Image 1 (cartoon, rainbow, N blue to C red):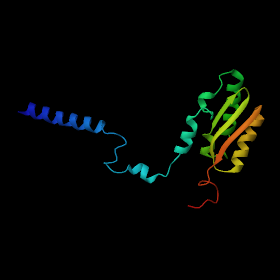
Image 2 (image 1 turned 90 degrees about the vertical axis):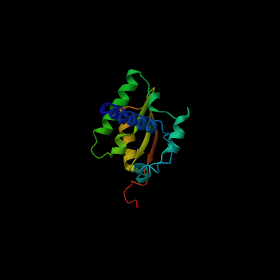
Image 3 (image 1 turned 60 degrees about the horizontal axis):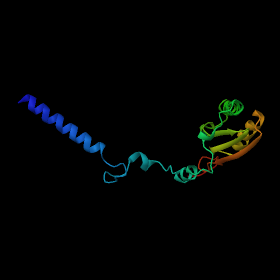
Image 4 (image 1 turned 45 degrees about the vertical axis):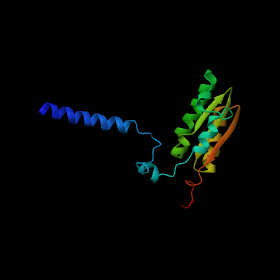
Length: 143
C-alpha cells in the first residue's frame, strides 16, 4: 500500500511538472509576469533594427590583430574611467579595418563625447558614433 501511494504521488508530480513545462511562454492565462510588470524595459525597436544587415553588431568585429588591439584599448579606456556609468561601460565597440563603431546607450552627451575621445586617442582611423543618450537617466530627468 505504501509503495503504491509513493508511486501515485511521484506520478502526480511528474504529470504536474510536464504540463507546466509544456506551457507556452506566450500564454497569458496565468496572468502578467510580475517582474515584467514592474519594468518598463522596451527595446524591441532596437532589437528589430539590429536584425538587419545594415547595422553592425559585435559579431561583425574583425579578427585582425590591429582591430582586436584597437577594440581592447578603447574598452580598457572606457572601463578604467571611474566617471563612466554602467551603461557606458556596456556599450558595443566594433572595429573593422581601423573604423570604430560605437553603439549603445549612455547617460549624457559628455559621456558620449568622452567615449569618442577615448576612441580617437586609441588610434581609430574613423569613428561612427551611434551612441544614444538615455533621456530617462540623464541628469535632471523627471519621472
